[in-house]
Length: 101
Image (cartoon, rainbow, N blue to C red):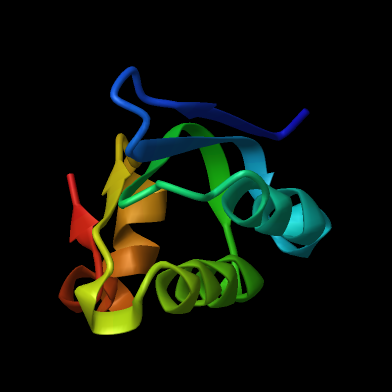
């Protein structure tokens, strides 16, 4: 499955790992990853260590996560991006909306 989730030991952080292509084909799985069983989640981590590709629909999905998680007050970190994925996030000015590590 291209989208895997787990909850941190303290129960307050949801880690969403994306494998392979992050595009419209992962839309429903990504949405389910942050919407289902989200009570008590205060922090979000999108782990892109295994993400090979990112397109504009993925950028839109990240914005939907941001809205779901509280907009400007959302605590979302995007981690472990490869150079190509990081370049797309930078060009899109996502470092102003998310903590990119």
